Image (cartoon, rainbow, N blue to C red):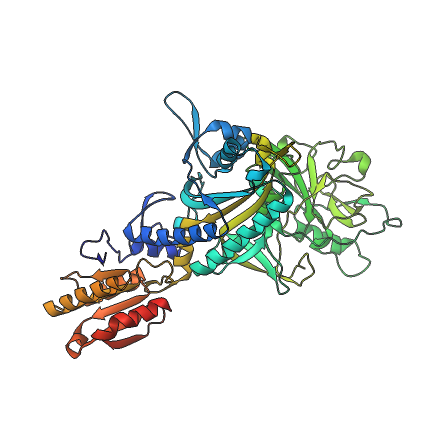
Length: 599
């Protein structure tokens, strides 16, 4: 049916909504696609549902192309499966939890790994049933502390999640690659540029993970890439560590007075003024900064961890959050922040501003068998034989020439500091440059984590029980709508790619004569009969300026104006993206629009 603006449930806005902080949020609300219901929660209006439906159709078609089959789970789920996988605890405060009238625990699903696993366990028992890939398009819920950017970071959102089930790792690799290819085709059809980057698996677990990021300045994800083809989320970048140094002839470390030097800058200035270096001057890169962090575990427990990093590098808390779980033998959502003065008071061996590992292994304050017993992790640049200036754990004192491995040890190595532009790519493909992007998709080789937790086993070819191996693959559906609006717009409004636009053509009747509206109505009907989706602005008492403004705000690819030119037998057809307009004879208008719609 032709959508008539006189009856369509739509009100466009002239002013930006007060809570909108990115362009896509402003335009989707102003153009009548969504409305805010609560922070991070949105209602979808008729035009918005048309765009959303087209995104979903493309996803469904590409999933079907690789043999994935669609199912649909409830969003309200019982606690027990998530208890078995430990995610009832691991998700921490991000999980919406509730109870029914009988006191039974439920949750609003953030993802559905457990339910997919249990479904396959319920129905399949033999390797002959595998491989199988299942998917759904379903609402998800996460209690974001700070929902922002409209649909880009909400508390309720729609995601396509699919899961592959294979008998062995070779099968998992094949399923993973099939989904990877499908995702590239999905984003190509949507008209979204994406960069595929290596990522960390985080709370999801698994051995391999990649993100599909849409480059945009408003993206929350920072990634890096090199001219040689390397690309990774900053959390997944691995440092090119220096070679170990022979320290057989290194001079003994010495404790020196360094009064009033609680910062790296004051320390460097002081040692340059009083202690000569063999070559050049001391710099912040010669210092070992020991940062005390508080890690909030999914259980709510607060654990103190110390991280030693070169003094010229800032700590990146997101990188630490992504990488610290393995050192704590803990999975799930981990919060990381700087330790407070109250935290430090509980560990008097740590002297604020002068923290160090200790002068030698016998008096270790940090590291293996230390007096504090705290977990001590170091940056990959801290390798055996490297000598450092660091705290002596006494007010106003530092250690010069503290040699790694000889004088102090550590409990593990962690990627903890900022990745800088110009750092070398870990694969040797050149210096890194940074960019920002929106995460549009994420794929994981989960392996056997969930299958083991929930007992998903089948009989293998030898008649023995074998644990199934899984892959997990997500696409942000509502996020795709926002990303498309963010990247396809101008100062007048949205410019939808044809594949997802709410209609093929927006017919505008301007003028007061009945003949204009009659001609516009007939053209709208002819366009619809030709197989096109049509929006017809038939509002009789609305000015041409308002109608043109609404057409450009709504963003349909082709605008057909029936107005003054009708007296000369022509209509104006305008390309929304280029702004190019052409007068076309009325009799040729339908064919003209058809050609434009078909590309």
